[in-house]
Length: 187
Image (cartoon, rainbow, N blue to C red; front, top):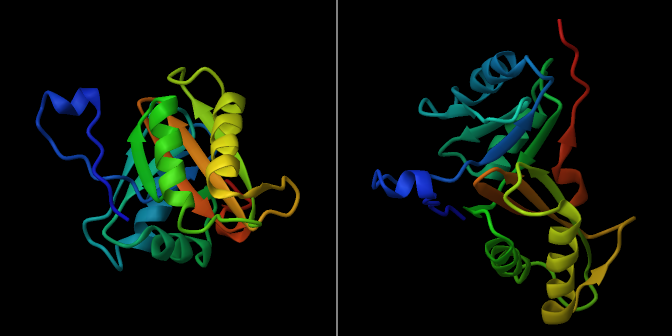
């Protein structure tokens, strides 16, 4: 699912902004090294792949023509030294609680239904929403009420992952094994 996100900054420039496919975290100050690792892995499949530093230390967005799951698997199966976490992203929206809830419900309709166990996990960077807990509770409540899902924090079938990165929020519906945490070994 590729969505085009037009943020306030980009609206005035009449530019299309393709949604990132991956979010990578790394040690503070090692972003350039993490980008080198990602590019070495992805450029073999997509010569136009690119990474973008965010205003938040240790957070990098990855843009590629590959699907988010395909790019995720390539990085998961490659040795890396600077990458902590890799999260595949399904959709990005302009940050607001309403936009996040609407996009989360749209994505969840495909996988979360009556008696499917899930939980919502939100990581907030910036102050565009008041709190991660508010986002988690609001999205979770809507999924329970509208789709019949069951909240299970210990053994969910799916995780609704929300990454708030300033003006954009990226949302994914993931199986528990689709978020990888690598042990970074800085050289």
